[in-house]
Image (cartoon, rainbow, N blue to C red):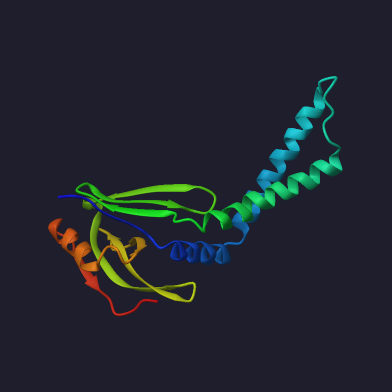
Length: 176
């Protein structure tokens, strides 16, 4: 059987990213701190043995540039990248694959069918908008991931695909 794939709506992924940022605002701040310290460390290393013709910028300029780059890397670039479609879902004979942009990087996730007990279909409210989603549940009953549908793949197609692998799809009324 051919694989079934779709791109999650970028607005859904963006809303999830910002919800996670609100839950843990220190994660981006920690990342900015690391970038800031790496840049200052780089400037320090250059200053230890400068080339006679090279003159590294002064510390005041270095601190300003490091702060700007750190804020851009921790907040600006993830915000810009969240405007692009950043998640593709693939259902194949082997399992479910989800390649997703996670703010500051990519996450390639895979769940074999043997690890999935069942699926549930419901609506999820993210960013003040309702999305039709499917949640994969592991054999221990824990939700593995929630994936938004894009309208190009119908829920009945996912149900048929899952049923061929012996997985039930429960339709829930609302979990918002």
